[in-house]
Length: 467
Ligand SMILES: Cc1ncc(COP(=O)(O)O)c(C=O)c1O
Image (cartoon, rainbow, N blue to C red):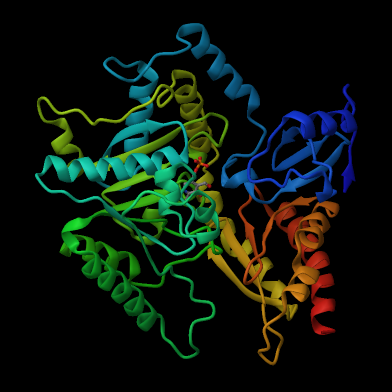
């Protein structure tokens, strides 16, 4: 860890930790004191770095939750944009009437969106965006005189936690505590290539995935399926890049069965893959796209669902209302901050930077293949994952005890934090490390990250080769 001169502020770290344990119920977090790890309290951000109450500095290798796309250095510009908006109009609902920032942001988003997507509906989160897509799809078919309600998503995909979005989520362990969920959420295979039979060509893999999707559509009955919802590159499961031909193949199946194709770009939107939207990078042609995090680089609570003319047309007819909305969807201050973020991203040529630097990041991460424990490095843009092996070199599966010892959170997350890097391992069948830095990261940050990974994974590797 690198200590810097952070002014110490009262209360102390220990006091904050105590108060946090007493009152602050954190998300997706083990709250038991027996967990034995006092919570880290982050007070400040700058560039790609976060600082805690003890003055330790960390490279934010996950852009917090895949969202702080321009990093932490533009607070003054965001504050000015927010302040100006607060002084002008602190709130107005985007319902029967509207306000200039919603109009400007909708127009800007339409400008950068994949071809044909013109109509932006603002939401207060990524999960709300996914809910919105499913509801647009259902009402769209009702307006066309059909009753289609099902949604197809992929194994292991994460789409949010409200009951609808959760039903679409592809990880059974996340769904189980809350079942029964919303009916009609159907899962198909994802595009994970690692672990597929040796010798299978990319073409064969694509055909296998498309056949799985088509069989599922036929099993469910095409006239019941409203949408297929996929991320351009799926985060959960470890940056699953689709094989060649997959994006076109999914589009063709959606056309064949008149199903709406929806891109969940909650993560891949706004530069993560080196283009404004991931769909543009991989050639996916969605009817609807949902986005959130990077729209404001997470400096405001806002997302955007963007639909094409085909989807929008029945909603624009006389007497028709999309029966959906909420209080905070296009909050003027959030819109002002998002507009500022897009302006900064353009000024910094974030997409150009990601494109120029992605090979360097990938090559440096791939150097970790020298550690036999590293099984797969995959991804694109500033969006990679490292999957560790879950078998011994002779193919014997690792036991749970061995896995815990090699790549438990304590070893990996805490080990990396001690090296000044914040990153989370997702332990499961295999351990996956997601790498998704702020899009302003550059060579010094890549070197810091890869050095830390080499140290921590090196230790895991020593234990692995000794098994
Ligand atoms: C692909 C995807 N969809 C939806 C969501 C839900 O977003 P939120 O947490 O803003 O509700 C996430 C969150 O990480 C996500 O990664």
